[in-house]
Each structure stands twice: as structure tokens, then as C-alpha cells.
Image (tube, rainbow, N blue to C red):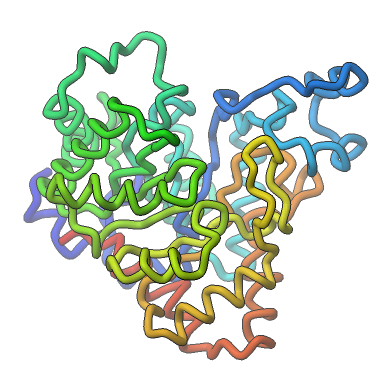
Length: 353
């Protein structure tokens, strides 16, 4: 694969497609994922009995308010469950999904390709390293150079993941902590190099601090990244100040509201006490659109737990189409704006240049 072959196309796990084939797209999801890097035991002795229980409806009440504290909840490993959940999304009009399970949280390109074949849904897969605490134990990131990491990302796009023949379609989600570590900065600079070489879009996972998103943008910009082709994930938990959110939008990056379905709660140990619910998310993205940033908005769910799936009593991948879009319309978003967010913006960003 060379860059001229990619230009003007979108690269899915089953091959290149035209941008017109993308349709309604979820730009930030996880289908097969091992998120146990985030696992932490509850402090209370009475709740430790729940931390290793299988996810069932009987403990859903507890899981809602104890994110990252149940081992089973953090593992999406069953392909048939993924197929069933994706088919619900397809039944509501969904056409494409971006799978952002990358190094550190169990990427499985072949499983994702099988899910795509069985559902008929376009799936675009990212390549990156997640946050430093998740780096694979068999990889010495201190010894890796920026150039070596960039070559890994470029190879995943151009040649495919290992010998699978399955190619990445974007760089990301690039994992960043707070404070931003030296290795994470190195990976960010490598992502900029890979973007320059491939023409792919970059997705960033910012750290747990109000200043983190802008620091990520500055690091990518200094390394020569294209900020107009950069997606800032998790904005509703990462950038709560309206003024800071506007400054972020002014950089040209995509503002991604990707926690739809999580109704306003985030673990208190992260000191994030004002994460919005879906209605507030819609208010905020409408404010951005009213200020002229309608072409820089993405929406998704970032489903990475069993308890987020319909099978286990969650909202699933169809929640935005089934539940949030009707609220968008009631709040005055036009069909044209909704189509811009769900179709046109992903089509533009995920097309290689």
C-alpha cells in the first residue's frame, strides 16, 4: 500500500472503501477490548465481594457508580456478543464504527475483521499506544525512539498489523496521562510523523486535567501534526470550562463528545464532579454549532465495559440513534446539523488526504 492508493479513500479492516460508503458513523468505540489497566479495588471491605463477580443485572446498580472496580466489567472479549450489539446499531441505521482498541488494551484485528464480516458494518481500526500505565510489559518504551514508534504506526497503516493483512485506518487513540509523561510525549510526536507520512487523522485521549487537552494539541502541533485533522476525545470529562472548550475549538481540532449514555457520573477519585448528562452534552454541542464549529463535532459512546452493552442492561451502540437524536431534534438541532455530525464530519476526517 502506498499513499497515493489511500488518498481519497477510507481504510477499513476489510479494505478500502469510498467515502460515500461510510454513512452514519460512531467515531470512538471498543468492540473487543481488555480495559483492566484501569482496574482498582474498592476500599470498602463490604464491596470487595463485588469486584470479582461476573457482570449480571443483579450488580448493575453497583457498577453504575463503581467504574473500573469490577474485573469482568472491564473485559469485552466475546465476539458473538459484539456481533449481536453491532447488529442492534445497524438496525437503527448505523453504517460504520471506529474501533480504538490499541496497544495496551488488547487490540485484536482479526476478531474485529470477523465482526465486520458477520455484521456488514464498516469498521475502521486505529493504531497507537494507550496511556503509559498500560504499555505492554514486553516492550521497553524508554528504549524506543520517536522514529521507531512512528514506523510502527506507518507500517500498521501501509502494510497492516503484523502478518494479518488487516490495515489501520487512523492514528489513535494516542494515550496521554496527567501529568503528561516523557514517553507519552514521544508517542505523540511519533503520531505526528505517522500522520505526515500517511495522511491519516489522529485521535487523542487526553489526561484527567482541564489543561491536558490543550497541552496535547501543543505537543502535536510542535511536532508538525495537522490540528485540523486531529480529534480530541472525551471532551465532556476533559474540558469542562466553556471558555477552555471554545479555545480548544479555535485550534481547529474536532471536539468529540464520546461518553453518550453515561448520565453525569464519573468516579470521584478523578475529581471530576461535573460530567454532563446527555441533555447537557447536546446543549454544549449546540452551543459550539451556533458559534460556527458545526464541522468540528463528533459524537460517540466509547463503550468499553460489559455494563454499557444492551446484553447486560446498558445503552449499547445504538443509543445515540435511538435515544439521543430525538432529544437533539427537540432541542432545536436541524436534520442538516445532525447529518453533519453523524455523517459529513466523519466522512471528511476519516478520508485519507
